[in-house]
Length: 553
Image (cartoon, rainbow, N blue to C red; front, side, top):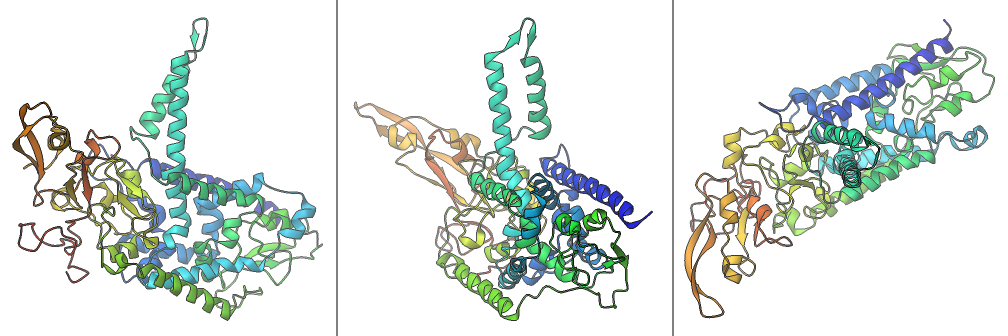
């Protein structure tokens, strides 16, 4: 079997592996839901644990590497031996870009002029350098650009909610219209399909995410860029691809000329990475995805991948990143880091009342150094309380999880967010430990509370409070109504020593626009400095159960 025939088989094998990897990624995403019993599977975060960019970002942030996180080293070893096969064979986002690039294929004459190597492909290496500098300073913005996080976050907060709305709206429209032809009703087909989507795909969760439209817009925009250049994201922007490219400079599997090149440039047209297979001796191993397209397209059998010793210098070119450009990228990362650290909130001079983190979240500096904005905790949250942050945590906390009580509450008997977090930004806690933590404090707005402002009886907040000894209690107070009638009403109070800030009182409050009882970040266990009362005024309990006060409070 000649090289071209073997390569064609490998191309089809690669396509199958890409499809299987994407299917596995989506399957793990859909499986991130409250389990019927026990703890969720440790496989849910598989793609983040084999991601070297996540690994090195946490390491630079000062966190020890151990356990499943070290699986990412296997990806590095695979890259050293085979080149960027993770990008070409295993990356689920890469599989989507590959499919869109195929759909956007253009005429050969135009592609010859535009699809060769561009100096702008160095931009992903500069972006990587900036992100590593930021991670070293405790701002792990790698998750904003990491392909695994980007895809997971986009599917969870953007695509799935849009799909759920479309399924529910169309099913309801068909059900109400009841179109039929004699005894044949369309609902006989639509209703079973709707129940399948509701029970198997969405698992009864109501998926609504603030800011999901922006995340989906960015994601779709990145996919559409493939119509401009094949695998645009992978060529120009992907920092994980840049990291793997840095490991692939002396890969053991190398593209070598094996015959006389006819200069037909079919290999150029088929190469999605612009790795210069059409230029003998100038192949770019840092850019090559190991997709075998070039060998499969060569009618002269002039190319093949061959094994060579790692210590032997390859006959290939190198991507010249430029020292000045690299230094400039590092300085840009330092500048972004300083920008993130300038606001008063970043220096713990003030605390944002809307920044309510999940139970078990580390102190804010450590949390931001670990969180990769993946959205796994948001998908697992059974009430939809966890949402992608926009401005609550400043630029450093973009798309990190925050709890928005008006959209959902922290379930008293749930600790899933910490159990599924792939980086430890949210500590995995036993249920009893989680229930003892405080993530905020409920506060009353007496200008909106019915018993205070309108002389109406309401006990909703107290009824839903899940704390065994209710954190919300009543004080019976006699009030005089407008007509002179006097009535005894139960007016709610909040016991700060018992309130955990779960937010169910705000979620269930009858005031639909802005609740009369609202939860803020005050009194959170992870920041003893963020307290609403003077020390000793009320026995609020111990300090941060996850470690010492990072601010010295």
